[in-house]
Image: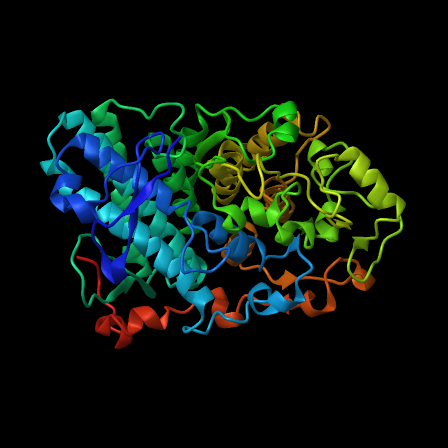
Length: 521
């Protein structure tokens, strides 16, 4: 399989784009052919849609780890959360949320840069696809895909840079810069309510266009959006907005044709190869790898990357201890009960029985990889250093969204049913039952989000949304975090868990620099 090339279409801050077909074949860059040629035919627009998918699986800013969506999951969802431990005291500023109010930080800038890159490319497609030569149904499908990319990007930006909805005065607070075409220049912030209104509008239009087109993506094109991805994006956006009716409605629609993994698949899939439960993901192959930049090079237990060998990723001891013994997911992590290891860090020296037994159980663990108590074996890679397909949406998340939404709609039986479907009916825990109500039921929903979605980039986002206080403990106090990382962070601290708009935007955009906020047109 040939490698793809990057092309430029349009956008702010020299936002680039990668062009590739459904199997990522080489194409000529628009720098040589011109933007008009890029949108001349629907076949060419398909290459541009494929390029959007590559934007989400690319490395940026000449910084290791800033690798499209994988970086968001790892550095912005996992690291600063409560349930994800890694022995990296030197990363305390990121892990302890100390840079949220630093607009000059590269970490503050990266999500803004990355998602507006994706938005810019989606905008070019939305603006130009109607003029392409080709079947009308194809044009509708391609525009729907571009609108889905744009809605997803704005949804993620809202979570990172805006207030949580419950603190937003019903959205009457600063939102985002809504760039909806190919123009550049000054553009003010809208309100958060207007940002969500645009997300909903994009998804409504996309769903209509998907239906009118009569088209569906090919099964192998799991990395491209179609109507189920629009449903899933709607469900997550509605969850973030506390719009419980739409959250439940679209979660059901998104998962309808995506049955949960069997226990065999759950334990062997390694979250590196798409299957029936995956609604949307990111493509990766040995000949098109991000090498040491990828998500899997930071987490997969069998990776040969130093980020894994020296710093294996671990579940929090306190969360692990809440997983029932009858739950197969407990096997995703290394249980150190009855073994000796260093409790100041969690490391088990090679001479210890814990290390020896672990290597015997997991022969694909490299001989020079460190063993830590509670280290993860949920995620592996298909090839070194970090080749693996990246999951964006799967049915388990949709069931959990449905459970939370039904609880908030005062339908405890609906919430209980969703939890039973996820845990008992699926076989994950054949002994599971749920008759909890009130606050106990909400805590049950939270617990199983933390277990099921661990390591997939939800930890910090969920805690922010729930407005929960983050508490990490050392081994001495019942946890497994280093003293430097064993902190307590309240919802009203750390700029209310919002990253500031980066100076690279305010320096460029006078309307944002001057603090102008206007309703969306």
